[in-house]
Image 1 (cartoon, rainbow, N blue to C red):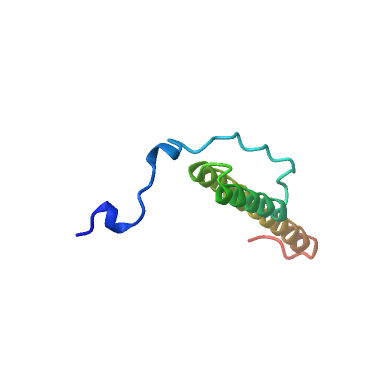
Image 2 (image 1 turned 90 degrees about the vertical axis):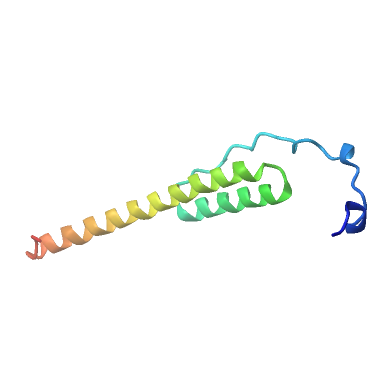
Length: 97
């Protein structure tokens, strides 16, 4: 079994911060009303987490919210499309399920 000294150079634990610095994330400046904007914001959160600007746990929570917003946008789009199809079918006399 290897000792700490055999595994590699000793790390000066006093030089490491106890916790990563926590800067508050910058608020989203764009409206998240399209999938493209949601995707762009998700990329921004990912890059901030990779750079250490925000904690990974916070990025994970933000990503989950952005994913949910994206799903809602898709559901809304489908609702509008189905409504159009139903109206078109009613106009052609093919209404009724």
